[in-house]
Structures are given as structure tokens and as C-alpha cells.
Image 1 (cartoon, rainbow, N blue to C red):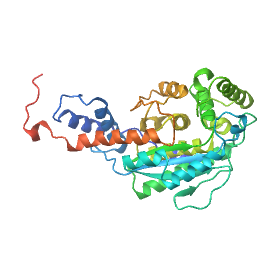
Image 2 (image 1 turned 90 degrees about the vertical axis):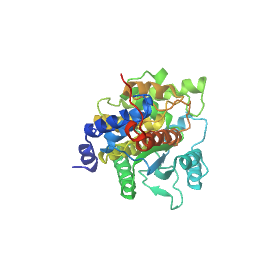
Image 3 (image 1 turned 45 degrees about the vertical axis):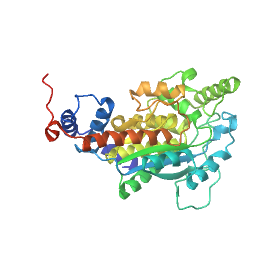
Image 4 (image 1 turned 180 degrees about the horizontal axis):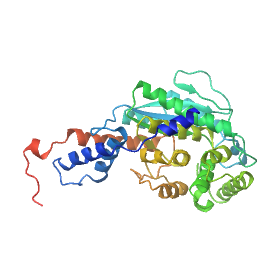
Length: 352
């Protein structure tokens, strides 16, 4: 049995007993029942994922997967492909948006080279999980082989398991890859059945003729490759990306280890579609961080039935929305752990 198949087999349903215990504790805190709304819901979900009535989110990691895309040659982004590697260097230097917000959230940042066009020099903060020097141009043929797709998924699993060995309560995936909203749009169109007019958005800011061209490129990729919507691995191989595969593997690995997954924006959510296509039960382990400004992301979330924690019109990627949502997750757990109960505070309960 392959490593991927083993991990999928290890994914289990949420712990209903732990959730019931957390719900009962929430109902005894000094507040009207349900008055903290989704903070209460979130703490209960965290309990079900971790399998304990008092969940913990102290040890947080954001794993940023980076990869280049052959489809960038079609002019679907406002930025040149060299920016992918340049931004990875910024992540390693601690000056990017994700670094700032991760510090605020108290999360460790791990940067992974899943397949940059040009390999970077060795750096203690950079993990080398390269599948190849970027994907092939999906508008001309498959983005990768099926074997490469499996390798990307298993690289994500390996990266997650290494973090678990260090101690991990909450994980999020981030992304970096010029043109990666194009494969994400294709994945969304196929696996979520979203029309191209909604699936393909502005990405780095394209509009007008450039946006129409981007939609035409995705349409061409789908017609050239005919990805099978009943086979998520086929979709990943034909119109995906190495970092998208890595993120999907990370999510599967986290679910197998009962680690909650904060799903960032459009690219991470397209990876979540792939992961759920391979293992439907993994969706129970997802906490949707935010609803991005990408139209495809909004349609994707609706299809998956995910209710995002935040709605800030973000579209940066990197895991920035996930970092913000981690703060909300921590708030939900702190209320659960630190707020007094009616009995401990000597406060009368309601008579209703």
C-alpha cells in the first residue's frame, strides 16, 4: 500500500464524545448559552478534531508551499515568474506579509520548495521537496504526470509529519507561485462544477482583455486535458500545481494525525477540494480561514459547505488569512479554558 493510501485510511470521524463534553462546558460558562456564537462552535469543532474536551492551539505552524507554473508562459499574471523565487527569499528573510501576521499569531513559518523554476541556494529555513523545475504548461498538455502528483501529495504528508514530531496543535498551509490562481480556477471548475465566468478571477489584478484571456487559457487547458471530475488525482495531475498537491497532502496528513487544518484562500481551498476528492472525511478537519476577493473562492466555499471565519477581501495568499484566523481559534479556546462557570463564579443561572 502506498504512503498516500495509508494516510487516507487513517482519517477517522470527529470525536463526538469530546464535542458533547465541550458543548456542555460551554453551556455552563458565565454567559447566555450560545452568546459567543461561532467562537463556541469553533471550540467544539477543535475538540472533535483533537479528540479532547479541552483542545489546545498553542503550537501553531504555517507551512508555505512554493512552486512555479508552466502556464505562466501564457501571460495570465501581471508579474513575471521570477517573483516566485524572489518572494520565497523574502519569506526566509522574515519580511513578507505572512511573516508579520505569523509573528502576531505566534505561529512558526516553514517554507517549502515544491518546484521552483530555478532552485535556490541551501538555507536552514527552506525545505527541499522539489518535484521538478515547475509544472508543464497545462494549456498545452498535462501539468504533471500522475506519478508526480502522487509525489507532491506525499511530500506534503512528509512535511506535515515532521512538524507533528516537533509538536503541533494547529496547522495552516500557505502558497506562493506566480500564475497559481489559473490552475486553482481550473480545479474549481472541474471539482466544484463552477462555470469559468465565476471560477476564473483577477488573481494578481488582471482585468478586461487580460481577464478574458485568462479564462480562455483555462478553457483551453480543460479541453486539451479533459480532467476527470470523479478522479481528484487526475485533476491535480492535469491542471494542478506542485504546491497545490503539497498543500492537499499536508491536509490529508493533518487529518490522519487529528490536527486541525486552517484553510487559507483560493489556492489552499483548491487544494482542499483535491484532498476532499481523495478522502471525503478530511473535510471535517477543515477550518475555513476567510472568504477572499476571488470570485472562484466564494463559489468553491459554497460548494464545499465551508463557512469562513473572516471576510476581509484578502487575496494575497501566503497563508495570511489563515494567520488571522488562527487568532480567532486561539480566542475560542481561551474562552473555553479561562472563562468562569456559573458555579465557580457564584452567579445564578437563568430560570428559563
